[in-house]
Length: 90
Image 1 (cartoon, rainbow, N blue to C red):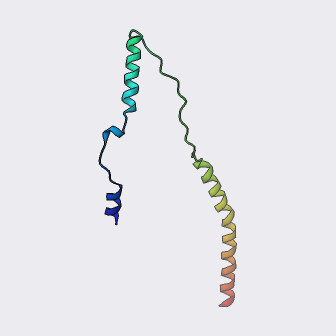
Image 2 (cartoon, one colour):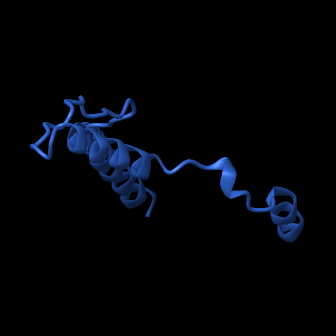
Image 3 (cartoon, helix red, strand yellow):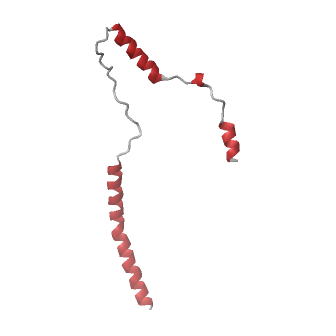
């Protein structure tokens, strides 16, 4: 079944489908530098891309620890009750 899935998703390689954006940008920069007489060019200002799905792991860990600490006394109380029931049953 896995082989069938791979075979269905496999297509023949077509290099014309892909564009080398790095090469295009580099050639553009070289051309601009040649036009400017070889002087230094300033890099274009671009805002860094920010991920939309960023999770604050420290905050999640803190909440998880608080939740487990809140549950812990209940478990200890349940254990002491079950121990009392066992002693009384014996």
